[in-house]
Image (cartoon, rainbow, N blue to C red; front, side, top):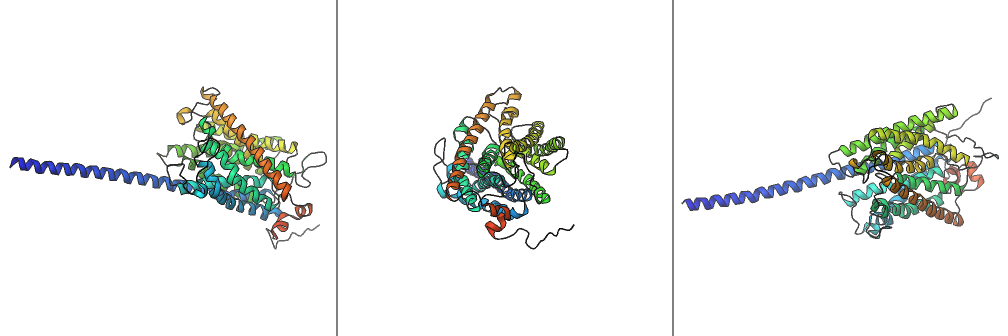
Length: 445
C-alpha cells in the first residue's frame, strides 16, 4: 500500500517538475519574444524619426537659398531618399553588412540571404540603415545648390547610396578593417556626416561658385536666403529627428540608461553649439546672426554623433561649444578660398564630422563602453590615433571616389546648368514650375 502511494507521489512529483520546467521555458521564450518586439519597435520609431530628417534638410536648404531655386532643391531632397532606398536595397546593404572581407561586403544583393546586423529583424535594421544612407546623400544637395543639373544630381545620389557610403559603412559598422582597429563612431559623425560633407566639398569645388558670388578681388558677396523662418523650422525638425539618429543607434532598449545618456548628450551639444556660434559671429561681424546660430546647433549635433554614448554630459557641452566656433571659422575659410557652399554643408557636416570623431579619442571613457580611455582620462594617444587614422582614410576615400564620380558626370552629361538657366532659376529651367506661383512683388518709389 505504502509502496503504491510512493510510486504515485513520485510520478506526480516528476510530472510537476517537467511541467514547471516547461512553464519556465515558455516564460523565458515569451520574455525573449517580448524583448525583441520592444527593441524592434524602438528601432522602427528611430528609423521614422531619421526619415523625417529629410524634411528638415529640405526646409533648411530651401530657406537658405533664393526663391527661384526652391523647387529644385526640394526635388533633390525628395529624390535623394528615393534613390537611396533603391540603391541601398539593391547593392548598398550587401556591401555594408554582408559577409565578405575587411574592405567590402559581398553577400545579400537585393536582400536575398541578407542577415540583420543587430538583434532585431533584418527588415527593421535595413530600414533604419537606409534612412541613414539617405541622410548622407542629401547633405550634398545644399553644398551644390543653385547651379547643379538635376539629372547629374540623380546619378550622383544613386552612386553614393549604392556603393560609396556602404563601403565606408562596412569598414566601420560592418566589421571591416577600421572596426577591427577599434575605430569608434557610435552614430555617424564620420560614416554619415564627414562622408556627406566632404562629398559636398569636392563637388562644389568642381562645380565652381555661383554667378556673382565673388567679386573680382576675390571677396565674397552675400547672397541671402529667401526664407529664414523656413530654415528655422528645418533646424528644429533636424534637432528633433536627431533623437532618433543618435539614441536610436543603441538598436536596443536595454535598461534605458544608454538611451538616456545619448539623448541628453545630443541635446546639450546642440544647445552649446548654437550659443557659441551666435557669440562668435556677433563678436566677429557685430550682429547675432540667426542663420549662423542655427548652423552652430547643427554643428553641435554633428560633432556629438560619434562620441554621444561614450562621454559625460559636461564633455558633450564642450564638444558642442567647440563645434559652434568651428562652423563659423569654416564658413570664413571657405569664403577666403573661393569655395561657394550656399548652406554651410561643408563646415557643418564635414569639418564637425571630423571634430566629433576625434573627440571620441579625447573625451571617451572605457567605463562607458569605449575600447580605450580617451587622452583626457589617461588613456594616452591610442584611441585618438585610431580615430585620426580612420577619419583621414574616410575623407581621402570620399574625395578621390566622389571627385572621380563628379568628373565623369561632368565629362558626359555635364554638372552645371548654363548661365541663362542659372540666372532665371532652376525651378523654371529644370522643372518648368515656380515654388511661389501667383505671387508678385510690386516695387514703389
